[in-house]
Image (tube, rainbow, N blue to C red; front, side):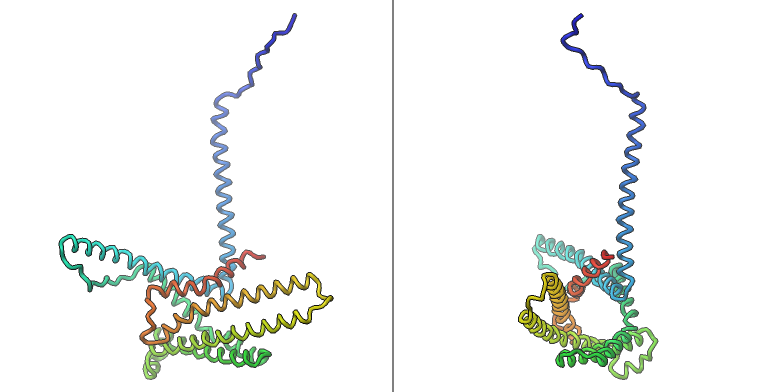
Length: 308
């Protein structure tokens, strides 16, 4: 008996409908668990890196400074935006009615949550800087024991140590007097807290001023060193040695540029605070400028937490 020309396909065995209904929720539950595990893992990594960042004084200062500056920016943004919209509406209504728009209105002062956060972060930084004379002592002692080989750098470093001690000492006394820890009568006898703050900032500006000369001198010495190394380079220098020297030079130049950017951004702002009437920098921009000065350093600190 001949086989038929076409054999109909054997139908596949199917499971009852209730089996499929049971599997779908299980798959969704498994997917949700994987997503939750992924979120928890990412959160754990971030928290560990943040803990590592806050485990040293420099990292704490960078984080607190960032909170300080960002809160200041947000405060000014949230305080000015409604007022600008209000003024715009007043001007539009005045024009529609054929009147002259009001000019001498000022916004009502209100302390926002961002302003409170900015104040809290700032006071925390002040409290931590009360111990700032200790590392300055160590910096000065190390400079005396092992001074830089270059006499110009040596002199500039000594001047920076003196400027920073002057700055930190005056800031500490003024801050403690404002909190009632140090006799306010003594501070008032020599100009008052505001005057001490200004002179403290001038000490900080002295550090910034001398830092420009430090960076200039380091650049000169680096160019001389690189030129001498190229002249002395011979056949004994291997490719690995060249690669190591190039990487070290790259990192040195990067650190130099970061210091230059930081110094260049701080200089006008610090000069503004040094003068009783300032140089015209709006208060609303100080947070943004300050954040820009430390952004590179904060980035490097955060990247460093990813390294083992």
